[in-house]
Image (tube, rainbow, N blue to C red; front, top):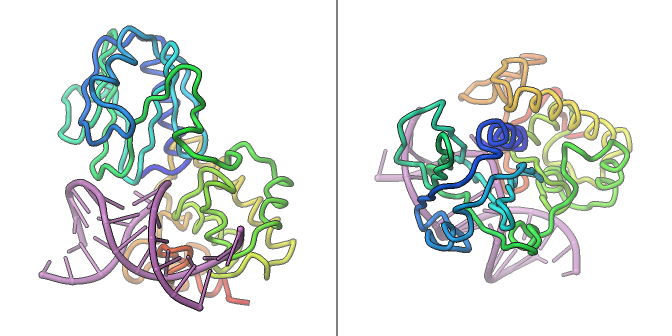
Length: 259
DNA sequence: TTGCATGTTCCGGA
DNA sequence: GTCCGGAACATGCA
């Protein structure tokens, strides 16, 4: 379930368990490797020491003595350290055997992927252009970014080239807190709307990043949105769903009126 | 059996 | 050039 807070959780997890350890061996499902082969991955990584992992948006990268390992988690990716779970799993698509254990990249649906960036090459060559990270951008800059956009507000917030890290569930959560209907055009919103969106973005990310995940909390839209007659955690109105920005959006018709 | 699912990318049409 | 919707990718679940 990787959105920015989850990937930030994986970054800390990798740093905690695997950073500083030397890679002894790698195994990989060739179909999860996006720009290399199992042999190429081995040549790049074996013998190297895992450096400090970095996150930008939903991308995680980790330098390994020159080359950089780059991971994207798609919709179902995660990391597992052998000390926490001794057995390998059929969906473990890549395994780094390191001194003292192994780090596994698990991804059921394989919509994510694994890349290797050679020494001296920019990580952007695989991630493509990304906007500023949603965790690190400050409020004023985010308001300015939003004010310059056109089109739907939801599509804008999910556009990784504008702002990196927000996905469908987080954007629904932010718009619900900011009381903005997900199908509104950004050009029709007032300054106050944009400021509330920026404030709620900061709030949602701060709270969920502390935990390394989005809390399964019934006071969050995210914790209440599933099910046929899910209700708004704030006012109890039955939640509705519409398509916006190409995905299903859940919103409260009372808290997020059209006008 | 059908529709839907938290990701990105590519394509066609307005 | 801009914006939007839909399909594709791979797999599981209701």
